[in-house]
Image (cartoon, rainbow, N blue to C red; front, side, top):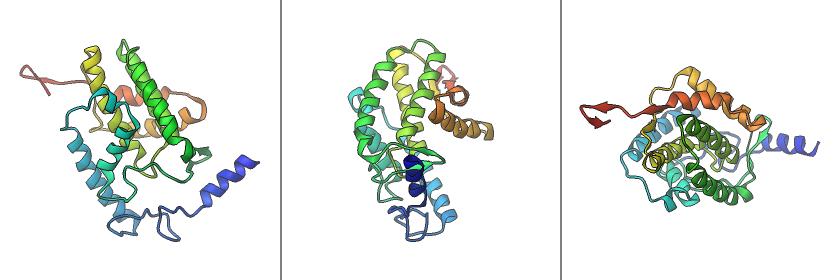
Length: 223
């Protein structure tokens, strides 16, 4: 009963990140119409994510750190939201699934990134890599460290981790999210729910299997 009451309270709570009597996030454009804000956000974050693809990978001690994960969020969302690059400070739920409480987020992320770095060394095959990506997408999703933009930052972060794995294991894969189908979106959304509820990674495995591609070779050079 106490848990149900807490979830109900969280769902009805007026977020301090939103305008009064609204669920529209406070933003640097002071746009209070959700559809307009969505359009602005999509356009800006798409450009920022493309820009990240042109940058070299950081060193391993940076890549596998909480600070770098926060930097990614800041780089993608700093032109839109004042909370860019900051761990959320209020509870969040989706459906009946509560995400990690704010006071535990940093500590859990620290442990998670250490484990990611350790588990990179255990990957031997493409199937191992897909399972690795699904598992850590699920883990990061349950933590849900940001008030907005978690999925995009998680996918960008894992894209960079795959590039690191290529160097470490002499693989030649990339995560390509440029041609996501409606079925892929359903697998990602429903897979995130299933993995949070009971640890079932089947749909997330399907999603990452479709996103994980061998790099194209054009006239003797990699794409």
